[in-house]
Amino acid sequence: MNYKWKLTGILLIIAVLLAGCSNTTVQPQESTLKTVEITMSTNPPMPTVGVNELVINLRNEKNQPITGANVDISADHSEMSGMTMNGVATEQENGNYAITADFSMLGLWKITIVVQKEEVEYKKVLDLKIQ
Ligand SMILES: [Cu+2]
Image 1 (cartoon, rainbow, N blue to C red):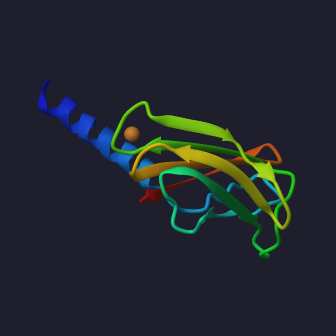
Image 2 (cartoon, rainbow, N blue to C red; image 1 turned 90 degrees about the vertical axis):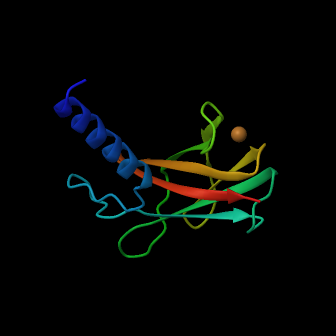
């Protein structure tokens, strides 16, 4: 492996890390929705090992609830590879979408939220600490 390839490898790793840490709202051009604000809360508020509810709230740029979206959730135990769960959140009232997740281990879990609305995808990745 020469220097150039090593550098390319490092840049790729940085790109992947940046993508993994992305916590911003995506603003696509070709949609009537200018912004999809994605926020997550948990039930209980301090999630513990076992079953917890994740509630995703979707808002547009006018802070109005977004209904009729498809919300896919996946959870990865950050310290381990292959410990992954995923499912589709069920729509509730007021732009909320809920799913229960059984966290089998303590520590940081990477939660990936993929929202589909009007054939556009919006994605948010955040960390959830299970304690
Ligand atoms: Cu694990």
